[in-house]
Every structure is written in C-alpha cells, then in structure tokens.
Amino acid sequence: MVGFGTVVTGDMVFDRAVEVLGTAERAAEWMGCKDSGLGFKPDDLVKTDEGTARVLHCLRRLELEQPV
Image (cartoon, rainbow, N blue to C red; front, side, top):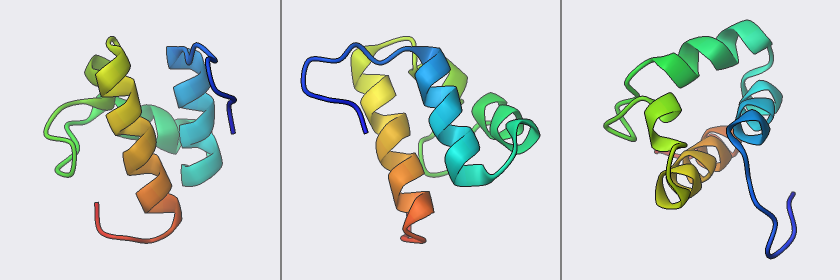
C-alpha cells in the first residue's frame, strides 16, 4: 500500500499486478490486453493519474474476487 502523496509509477502498478495475478507473465499479459472491466488496456490507462487509479481499483477488486 502506498501512502498519501506517493507518486505511483507504471512499474509500481505492474508490481501490484504481479502480486494479484501471481506471475510476471500473467501480469504482463493482463496489462497488455483490453480488459472488459476497464474498457482499455491497463498499459494505456497508467499514462494518466486517473487511469492509474482505475487500474489499481480494478486490481483490488480482482484480488478480493469482486466483480470488476
């Protein structure tokens, strides 16, 4: 978990995807595919702060096994 005011980078999002999805390979595949819950590729979304927040929220929901 990152603290308030922390700048979240694409690498940090990828690391979080590895934690949630289990392997770097699965994380890379997920980051590069258009995700139905996001409507865009996570790789494309992490280029903006709002997009990064959406990707992290999606990963959290996946982690909790909640609908995205």
